[in-house]
Length: 243
Image (tube, rainbow, N blue to C red; front, side):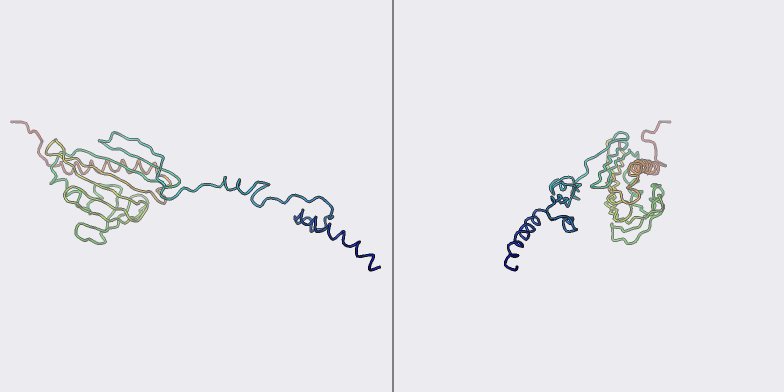
């Protein structure tokens, strides 16, 4: 009996090894007949799709240094004000705003109004209060309370007398710079007053970036007009009439 049984057992053992190599799905190990055709094994990254196809449809994340590519120009001419707005999912929301006006007053009357940083809320209505944290000569660290939601931002201001004030916005809902500068023009004794914003919006300001850019542009034009009126007040006429 033992000699006759050995060749009978060898055949089924070889057949099991052959089918085990052809079908490795879990169903074959759960009681399915050995001679049944094996079901195809599902792909790990999709229904029958190769790995390469899955990689191709993954979202591409652009590098952080990629510059914004979408821009919008609007507003009046550059002599009165201009706005350039840029938005991209890769770089967030940033904007550049230019505004300028002619002031019929000498430089000596305009510069003190710009250099008096504590009086900024008088001209810039978007600022509720300012608090000086530290002053080192012409470099001032300060905290600014904005009119919108009483948000606070930290700035470092550089005075370049008598022509330019540079606001470096370090912390808060905006990052970037605001530069207010004075330029002489041909119509003496007047000067050209210009403000330039290059800022990056963050937090709640980023959600309404387009409306925020319009609000800042309007507020900048109004601030320059108030500075103009303050500098021109009590000034004699450029061409006084003879009696």
